[in-house]
Each structure stands twice: as structure tokens, then as C-alpha cells.
Length: 317
Image 1 (cartoon, rainbow, N blue to C red):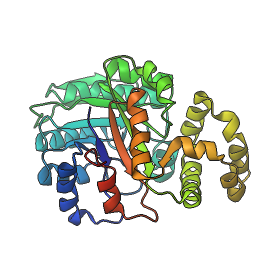
Image 2 (image 1 turned 60 degrees about the vertical axis):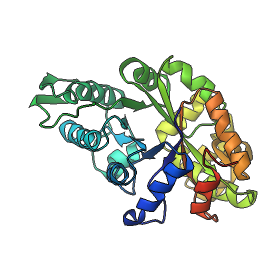
Image 3 (image 1 turned 90 degrees about the vertical axis):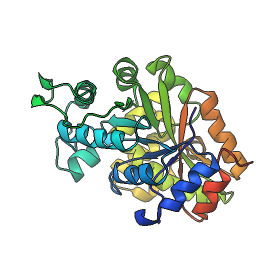
Image 4 (image 1 turned 180 degrees about the vertical axis):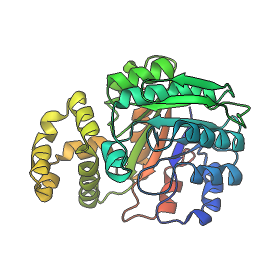
């Protein structure tokens, strides 16, 4: 089992991350997981970590399946696998229509097939094998990596509902899960199947100022759970009745009412908050329910981020 932290750290320039990465190792963190939405790209923070803190295992959670061509994604993954041999995991997934279509002007079409095809292509390409194949969603003509990694990285698939979770179990090395509660893990993990890595990004807010926590968390939840893929996910998890009023207000354009309609129960399910000891106990519940690799994402609002990293470390408490 690993114990990871989401990087880069909010408000800290990348050029100042070295001592943060080095301290992660000293504190007992074993992994650093990046993401890719509207901040940094997924690879640059990890490339710095590979140079500055080589003891860390590195992972992308996630790289969208659409926003790079298949060959370019294989090159980026191979380069990081070469920089961190045996210590890099490539997480890919559909991302969302917001990121793919609205921000990158790429059609968000056939997400399941696109992710499946990309996994199959990467499996071939990262071994150095020549790929000349027509997949359902793209065609590759005679591509071969010029620098295949000595240790091809494991490939993980971000999954929400059964189709993608089963794809992760069937054709990848594991799954990446996100925006779910500890109890939800018991429904998600069986869809992936046994013997697979389960990486969970877990949002944590080490603060006992519950009114501030819930106000900030409601904005985060509204931003995500109104995206169609996440709305469908939480409907499948059984949270539909609790979120229906929020969804209705959001669709009507009443953002204030949508935020107010998010029940405390939903906030408390999806964001771990409280004292550092309470947060660490909350993370343990995810592990007890089947997560193998937690990637903590600290909400940096009204707290000392550096101290929070220390307080939530595996060696703390």
C-alpha cells in the first residue's frame, strides 16, 4: 500500500517545490499524484519530482484520453518512465465534456471506446513495438517509440460507473476513483475486480471550522457534480434523491439556490474534515473499504498548507 499526496501544491510556484517534495519523503509519503484540468499539465510537476525526490512513486490522475494524440501521449509517458524507472504509473481517463469540448474544442465522442482504444495502443507502444492499426476511434500508421522505457509503466483507468470500472479491471492494471465517499468504495471496487490497484483522490480539509468547510466544499461539489459524468456517477451510487434539488436549481441557472440545496450529509460524505486525527481516521476508512493507494488532495482554504501536509503524514499521530 502506498500513501500519496496530490501535487503540485496550490500557491507554491513549481520552482519552489523541491523542498516540499523532499519533505514528503521524510514524512513517510510514498507517492505524488498529479492531475490535469485548468492548472499545470500532468507531467511537468512529476518530472520535477523525479529529479528532486527519486524515492517517490509518481502517477497521473489523470491525463485526458482526448487532449493529446496517442503517439504524443506515449512519448510523454515513456519520457517520465525513463526519468523515474519503475516508479511511474500512467493514469488515463475520459475527463469531461467541459475540459475536452469547452476548453479544448475537441468533440467528446464515444468516451468509453476512446479510453479503451488508448489503453490498447499504449500497451503496444510502450513496449517499443511498432503499431500499425485501426482502432475504433483513431488509426495509427507505423508508429514506434524511439526511446521505449526499460520498465513500461502500469496503466490505470479512471472509472466512475460500471463500464469504465470493468474496463480498468479487464484491460488495465487498476482504477483511479474520485469524488466519492468511503462507503461508496465498497460498491465501486467489486466492479474493477480482485488483484488490481485502486487509487483514490480523497479531498481533505483539516479544519474544525465546520461552517467554512461546508461553504467551500459546497462550491467544489457544485462545480463537479453538475458535470454530466459526475451527476450520472452519483445517481448510480444512490445519491440522486439528495442531489436532485441542487441539479434542478443549477439547470435553472440559480447558482445560489443550488449551493444551498446541497445537504450537509453529501458534504460530509465527500470531503473529510475535522482535526488532523479525524482526517487520518477518515482516510483509513477508504483503505479499509478497498482503496490500495490514497492520494490526498488538501483543500488549501484558511489553513497552513505546509503544516497540513505534516499533520496528515503517515508518520504523524
